[in-house]
Length: 442
Image (cartoon, rainbow, N blue to C red):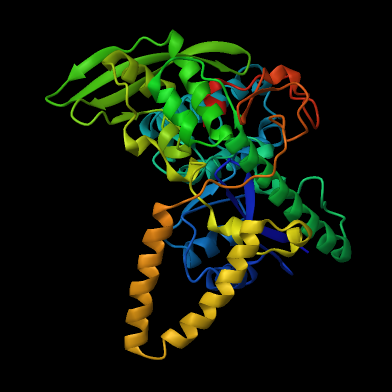
């Protein structure tokens, strides 16, 4: 019995379950019922982006039920088929595989990809390869160069660890029976809730030292969750070796070339990115598309800011979804998975919600009552927003991986994170293959 989950990303970059369903088959009719049912449960608010495998029935149904949503294929699922589809060619391991990786990861625009792809097909006589032909006809669904202007919230899958199925890794597998699945489903959700609560605690109670004196870095540190601030720091670290060169200048917009060193497979190469910078409002756009795709300003834009003496990051580069000071209403909704350890604010939320339901029922009986309730509620919102109290967190010292802290230094009410080397990693050992910087960014 196939399992179809809807998975999103929270403000820490962790996967969260938006919905799921056990379906009798994976045909178009079944997917149509599943997606329509999910859409009704979401008050007809459709997903903005969707990532799936190449299931034909699913692709056709998504085009009907979610016509405005941007649909993407999981790149990990595509590239894992390389050995099976291309391994029969003698040059696959020596040159062809590298050429394919170059087409996927190195090309910066649709035109550049198409030229590179045509060269790949011609060089290795792959005109008759049906798998590559099918991929080419749907390149807008999986090639990064065609997807850079779409925000994927960190779900632009390059590895299985980022795929939707990773949500249930360690809980269910192909041979899990229905009874066991129900139990493990609840355990998986409970674990995700606990992980998010731990990450919330860290963001408010654990401080990560800045690596520079930049006021831009400090602002990100103050506003962003720890997980996303680390992503910003990775980009800030990368500007050391970058030296932007002015290509052309118009009245307001200047275009810079930024040469960046990336590692692809087992060799290092130089990739040149183009950054358009507006002198008027300090808005920049880079061909790497990191900000558009993942919501993190790339090192190429940071390098331009440094050259231009920009000390204050424009508000458009501070995304609300990564901020730790914004309350997430969904975390206050009562859940069976954390009933034994319900937070006080969640209990207050549930109590007030019940009162509001009664008030709404009475107020909507007449137009006069509705207008009166609206006026009073707006006044109460203004009052409470002006007197917000900081969130109360359980007093507990944690390491960056969520375990009890041993190697930490307390400064005031905050905990300073020491080197990540003191935290022992969990899970299987990391792959010996070094992913390219471009892969990591995308």
